[in-house]
Length: 364
Image (tube, rainbow, N blue to C red; front, side):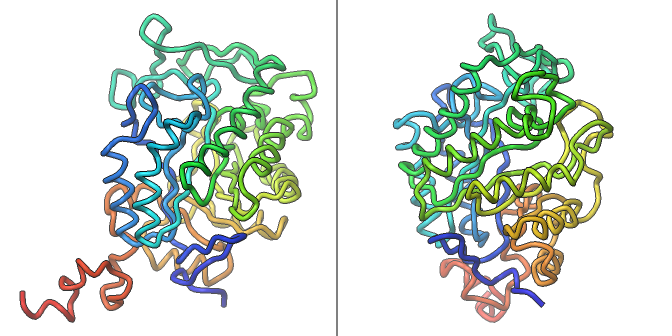
């Protein structure tokens, strides 16, 4: 038997107090300056109070042209980093580790807010405040605007943007950064043959398609302090013929391990707009993939998806399939998900709430 989900996990010099973690989930609540607002403070603060070991703050664009929408958070300048300190200070005061996901949207950029018009499938034109996107190839994602093909200058800029964002994340007080290399965004677009039709050194073979993501991984690892861990959200499979299979994901994961990455956040799909290319709606859908990548690399893994109760999280960790779990939608529904099944453990609850626990509730 392995550790329990309530036991700490040490990664470099950072100790995460438990292994139930908040997955990054975009709120589309930032202003045009990309800075976090009161919404973000309350949203992430509640989950820190709610007992998760690590709060992974949603995808933050590494530059203004790397956003998905005009309401995305950003971490590309010092003013944004200073604003993020409100979040990191509160999260860390609760004894929770503060993490941040770094993202470049690629061809999935410049779209509508999810609740406006066609939402994430609705493009925003330059005349309406949108921007021209780029990707590995000039192939659109669904009905979004077709990107221009990235040139060498675009590729080099993306690498430096990720590195600079990692420096800003450290300035903001984040203890962990995560590189978004999944869900059809820029790095995944280069990784997948479904979206990457290039014939130069960034396309074709798996080694070539991995080149940009590995450059980013090395640059971020060098830019972020050595005492702090760097995660990668990795795609285990594209769920589509001709896409990334698990053995290719394992090859990529081995290269990430060699680059000094500390943990793999395991997910899949969403590189093409096809319902069949989405992860199946089943319990712990990425747990087996996570175990495969763990065995291939020796890296700690944290699967996301279909983890709806703490007993399942406990089974995944104690069985050795995962070192931690990323919880998404259940934490949107219930900020106290990580404490909900622990009423007999008063020390896990904030002092302010302990009088509501069964053994303290005699006074009504």
